[in-house]
Length: 102
Image 1 (tube, rainbow, N blue to C red):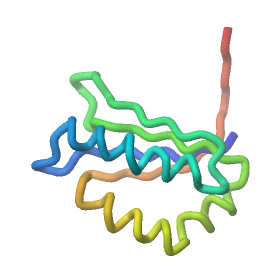
Image 2: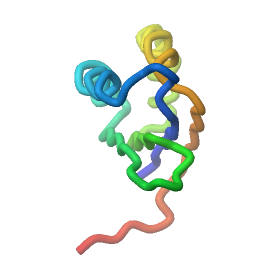
Image 3: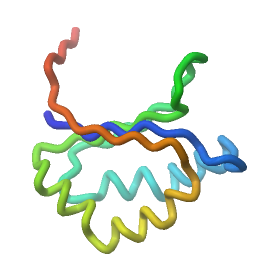
């Protein structure tokens, strides 16, 4: 399944607790409710050597639809609210080369 991957850090002055409240109340539900999103997962990175504090995975089976979602006025409003809370944003898009499970 195609995925958008977004890696980033909290902005200076934004505490872990403040950001978690924002994710629970707004960011998570916003992404889950985008029409082209099948699943949304946000990982808080606990590895000491990582350049990022968070990595998000946005699963979609409709990349064109996800692009439309991200160009909507609602997404624009989301970005205005979210971007002051974060820094060092890296966005990537890919498809699974392998997925296994037990």
